[in-house]
Length: 299
Image 1 (cartoon, helix red, strand yellow):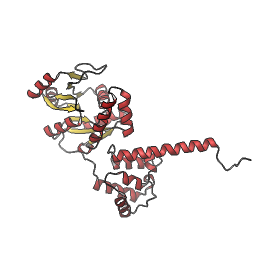
Image 2: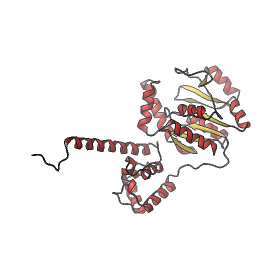
Image 3: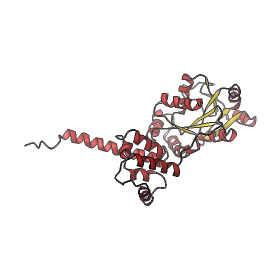
Image 4: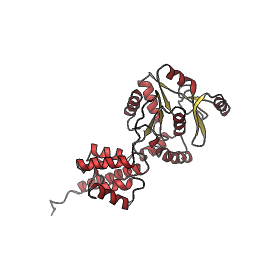
């Protein structure tokens, strides 16, 4: 005799799979906060925007201990200070609890705020394989009024790359000459292998003419630009998650296993530096990410 109260096996299996997938997604989100792929504030925003999402289903204690430097003792003190029950989920917080948690996060781990007196020099940087080049190409295609700088590099061309369009491909001797002549706004050795640099002349002409220049460069270069022009606007491009960044790097197939491992180690360091930037944009959709960068450049 069949027990009518017992769900069919297929339903139980499906429910179990959904539960496993939800746990994995919450674990990925916690890892992204821990490794600074996203800020605690960003995870809270996602939870409040969609309480039924993996972010919304995360319990507050889980959320707090995902934040670097927050252990169990500090977690419990924070919960007591904010009068939040340990069984509460982020998506189920009341209005007062939402406000208090946001204010607490902003006091302890403030997100960078835009600075006044900015120039029209916009720097787009981010970790390896995040899609900087793809987003920059989208901006170039849809907003030709924004000048996209073409970098010089000592690395060989990848399939499909065109001289003068994607990069200026030069040898080490020519790169040394450009540095000595002061022709580069910034330059750096990336992943301990090849050198990249931004020719100064085209950028200065665009800015002198009142236009907007976009530089798609690495973290080292962004820091050099900030030192040379403190009014430059720095935008950090983020992956939707660490797992997606790994997937993109492996999927493009342009590096061997050793090089991928080196780049992923570098990416962790780069992600930790996102607080140095004025704006952060998540590249979960190329067209949307491009428009967000354009909006920043137009402010």
